[in-house]
Amino acid sequence: MLCASYGGAIHEGKALILPALTAAVAASHIHFSDLGLHPDVFSIGVFTLRWYSLAYIAGIVIGWWYLLKLLDQPGAPMARRHADDLVFYATLGIILGGRIGYVLFYAPEMLTRPLSILRLWDGGMSFHGGVIGTSLGLIWFARKHGLNWLRVHDYVACCVPFGLFFGRLANFVNGELWGKPADVPWAIVFERTVPFGIPEPARHPSQLYEAGLEGIALALLLWFFFWRTNARYQPGKLVGVFLAGYGLARFTVEFFREPDAQLRQFAEATGLHMGQWLCVPMVVAGAYLIATAPGRRQRVEPVAGPDAVA
Image 1 (cartoon, rainbow, N blue to C red):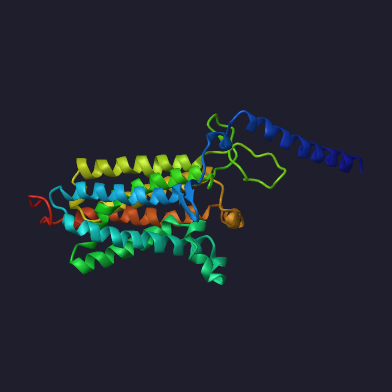
Image 2: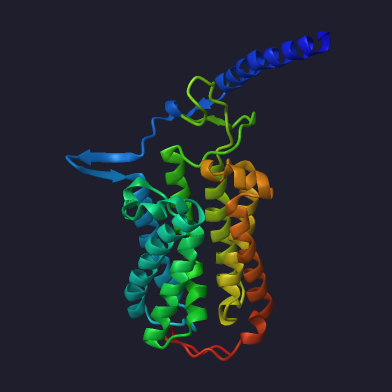
């Protein structure tokens, strides 16, 4: 009885001390509410422009601009006239694939409420689903125009990090997809991350980690392979670098990120987040494409650009 009472006292003491410690740690860090960020850019009547929407638009427009720069180089797999048509197929793939992927991978309960799937403005997009949707759209586009679908993927892969960068910044502005509790100097106290009445802990700004790795670092890696090596003449190599690079970056950052609330039990049971499991086939596929790319090298006759490249 004495031991039981003593243990109970310890338990109650922890219950009192831990919230106090959490509050003390959080007080020394940046609070998200002090940054003055809001998901909405402005509202006029029933119309609301959100930063998340602007992130998609910026990623597509800048990606299209960069694609035109890539197509000006010798040995391009398509002409500039194809770029506009490609953007339509890619955008359709991003939206449909991203939404369907979110429902299947992260919120299957939405299948019982089909109309909720159409409510894109409520949020909920899966990057892995977007990749699958975009890839299917590009294959459709390439077959329609008689182009090499794998080389088309290579060029589009170089443009994707722009969208990833802006998308992760939008996640940060929205105060969503935050990281695990942390006491690092740059930790941020986000809002509504724990039940009401419990002190909010400081957390890793994992959205910014992803913007840096999936956006900036991956863009620079692909820039190097495109502009400083002959990777663009080895079909599949650039898209392989993208898949492996993104997969490793996302897999790593997930260790600092809280799992989605509805998948917390899944993460505890399997030892990995859903996002990490979805990255495994990406890394494997990327490694395969990189390893086999030299064998696919052939004389590249340009659709755009002045020279053929052996």
